[in-house]
Length: 214
Image (cartoon, rainbow, N blue to C red; front, side):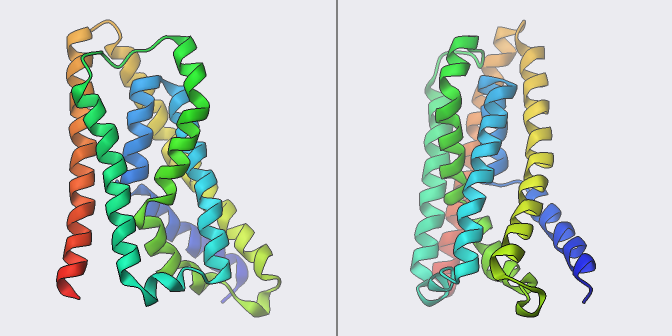
């Protein structure tokens, strides 16, 4: 297959995978709604940084361990779900609305970046992708392994920036509209918390289904 055609095919597949709602998208949306556009983009860049680790492990072949020891994958599903559930529960328990001061947002950007990276590292969808799809686009005859892996990561990163960036902007616009409507803002905070909990429950169901079929 022609190298440029191969990269376009990879981009189409990545676009479809990133576009599917999951832990990463839910976290970016929650970050933008609670902390504004900068918070949403900090979460996005954290997720992109986590992708570097995915590509590094995929290129080294470490991901094969998950095939040898499936229980490790199920554990990652549960850890990721638990982390997202913890964030969602915090929104449900909080009596505050989504708004925060500019100073609070600035102080929280580094933390939001770290949370985004952790969310990415605990995202089972990323590991499924690295196991099933990523190795198919590495061709020894097409040059250095790390050059190819870096090119594929760049496609992943730009796609995530495009899609999650749009989610962050949409979340920020929604937050601005709600800024003058405290009651609606409070309701949305609860709704986001429920969304994160629902995502966590679905992820746990995936892990349980995998155990039940083994």
